[in-house]
Image 1: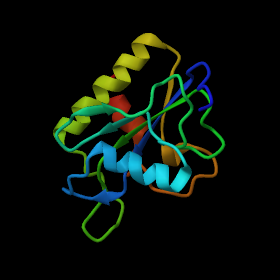
Image 2 (image 1 turned 45 degrees about the horizontal axis):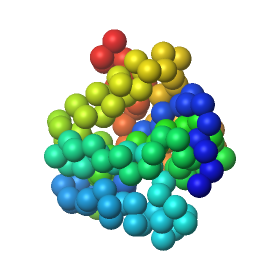
Image 3 (image 1 turned 90 degrees about the vertical axis):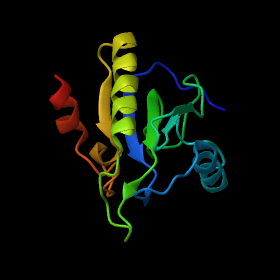
Length: 140
């Protein structure tokens, strides 16, 4: 696997799985391996807030087309309603775990840029189905 390079970004994603559907991190990684030939995300956060390291942050993931170098990918299970429309479905446990993970990386890398997948140029998806900048500002 190619090396990640110096970390400059952390990108938040959703799995685009229906609200409340309990999908284990291993399943998300298997889907990505089948589609992209490798694990996409460095971390997957399950409904109960458990954080699963699925790819060492020394290796490049496959989560933002053309922008994976130096970019840690974090995915939460959920992100769409029962009809498949984008919705912030994070459980309180997922939100807390995500915030703690972002804070851990920011402590290590003070100039870290945190974005949602949809915030990258050329991305026409709702992922992660919430406004990452507004969410981050709530904690400031």
